[in-house]
Length: 106
Image 1 (spheres, rainbow, N blue to C red):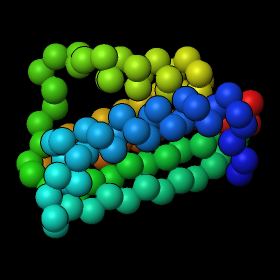
Image 2: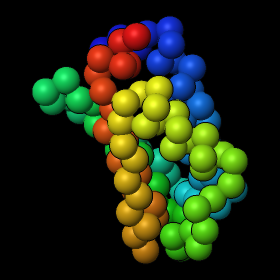
Image 3: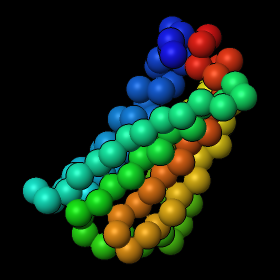
Image 4: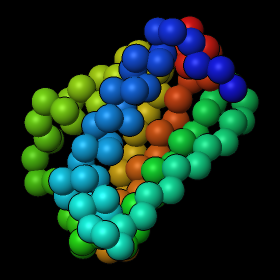
């Protein structure tokens, strides 16, 4: 699937924020950590699943987050027409992004 010029910037912000957080706090902060990014499409919606394993135990944030988290949420909901869900599993965080295929093509 192609990603349009407008969506490419928003998508790069999303991946940058997720990778930065993983490097600081998650699976990518450990030599044993792994990251899996998978995707699927259905009915014009793109689902991207970011799964971290092998890092330190993670807990859900106690506050709504800083600037990066707010930018991430705005990029997903506003520019990419989607939603973001977090599963703070003991094994590592799983983040599911559901994005509008139409918005991704813009």
